[in-house]
Image (cartoon, rainbow, N blue to C red; front, side, top):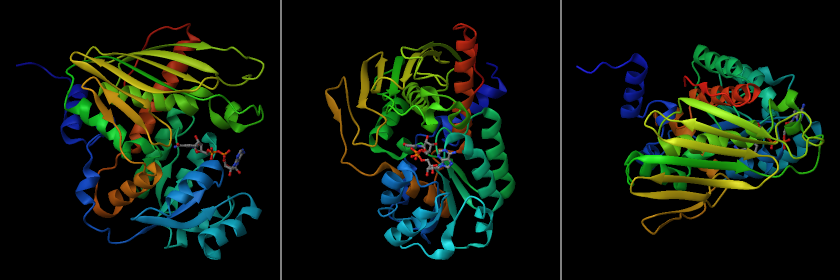
Length: 371
Ligand code: NAD
């Protein structure tokens, strides 16, 4: 009888059940669409910057299973503006100091942390302690240890946890996941994923400040490339080697500008990722035994777009990805639908991020991954 290690056995079980982050590709939410949720869940956004203002709050006007119920802000002038615009009652407005009193507010079910990366762990753990379900923006935190602490806090408080990887609720990405799952083009030999955008010219922004961001392009956009390579390969990598490039060290003083990394996957697939704060990159491509597939708008807010070697366009009507994402998480809480992006997926990605930085530190040495 062929022996099977405990690790590979649990991976096979995960694949069979779709229960674990890495193979979390089964579009089960459609099974729940016809069943209205028993309750629309109240979400409080923590941090009212660009992403909350222009993506999450507008999306919460389109969600069916959750709504914007509260805000947590460190900027008093935003309170009145948001209260009027989104009809938020005074008692649902918090600042960073009194945030923990949210524990007594039964109209808030989910806390969504949308702060600079180094603040995620603190606010996610406080939210869990307050008995609230948690969505944490990407990257989940600035270290593996912090990701684990968030997971532990949510488990201890018996609350649900998700990471803001919106693309898992997005139809073009789900179509890629289906092609991979059903091996439509046979074995996948090579994947390449590139995600990046040029920095906006403000050297004072928190994304270029390692103490607040945890790292540069890799932390910000590299996690999308890691995600893309993994869902295009259909499995987690077993090793990584990486290189860093800097064309403008005077500007990118504290954080990485451009990183390239190569993965090996257990089935023999080879992967390459590139991420940059200096180049516009937005692509995912896979070469298979019997053809290829790609998304060449792969990570932005959409509409995404792609095609396959079967002369098929991958094209779906525009929907706000964040609305789909937050509704999926609400259905996970109210109806037991799959958690498309559990905390373990954010943790896995930070393990890969840390290995990439380690490889760069060691001059490109291959690092074995256990994710
Ligand atoms: P932003 O700079 O626009 O907003 C940050 C918010 O945090 C502001 O409201 C700011 O006042 C507040 N803040 C509190 N303490 C701060 C400090 N010390 N320094 C700077 N700001 C501080 O950032 P953003 O683009 O909204 O990003 C917030 C989080 O959302 C990040 O983790 C980012 O990676 C994530 N994000 C995710 C997506 C996605 O597509 N999933 C897109 C954009 C941002």
